[in-house]
Length: 411
Image (cartoon, rainbow, N blue to C red; front, side, top):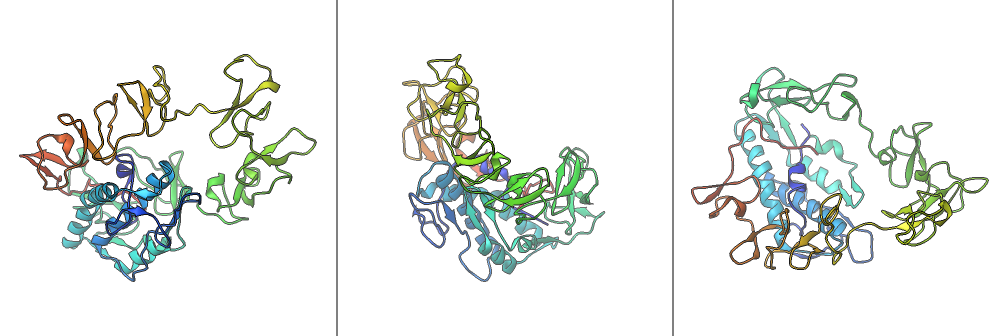
């Protein structure tokens, strides 16, 4: 059974730290991110085996690296991030694994966990791992297809625990759909087997990290430095500036394919304010090619590279497409109607509009200060104080019971 701390954690928080609990700048070999360099890290510590309780710090390290180094662009990682992500993982993952093992419905392989995590390299473009097969062996269910299952981790490889009608437990171990079989995401639909993707409600071969010459449908299925030639469905090496190209993906990072000459060639991408003309894909990163603000009805030759992203200090937009501060990690501060980064634990709060304002915590309305979430079994007076997934019951943040519907996600 393939498993991972699912998207439920990623969308809940923003931020991070290093395993073991020490905040600070990430350094090699277990961090790798230093200002001015490409963020890279390896979550594993090199140990020969990881206990179940050691998995959550590794997951937390990965999520926090991605949020802090890649999304926030910072190199110093607050302790609150690591603490919060570890606690989330323990609530949603460790308990579910432990109960399935204790019930005799699954086995855990610490050596496979070590090979899996030690082989990972995490960058802002994703995670690569030559030991992915070991990741699939970390947690293995023991219940055969067709038999009742009490936990999401219970079923043998190639099957999963499908809850009964109305989401009741115990569920039944149902075989995963094979290549070419129907699949879907609604209740009762079959899920694709490991190594397959549900594409157009049909299971198809999963294509990831394809080498040059390998099969592909999209460029992100190819290894770094390669692109997918859609005419041939083959991964090819990206080319340098001045070389002939047939597609924007064919050029190395920082370049674009200019079709203006007799032969299309790769050229350096243009910065904000530079004239892009008819070359819509000529602008760097998230910039786009359009008429300048002072001349909304321009000719094609007058179009320039523009940046419509919202930055800290920009005024809140009444008609913003993704809210008053666009798409990102900013919130609208009502005292001056400007977009600001979310406050961290210990900083003032209480001026947000329609969003959860604090990073890794909640906003205490009495003190207007961000405070860390209350963890499992800690005291609470309101639901807002408790870590996501916990309920404030009789003055204590309480975890729900582990059942066949508890989601382990996928790795």
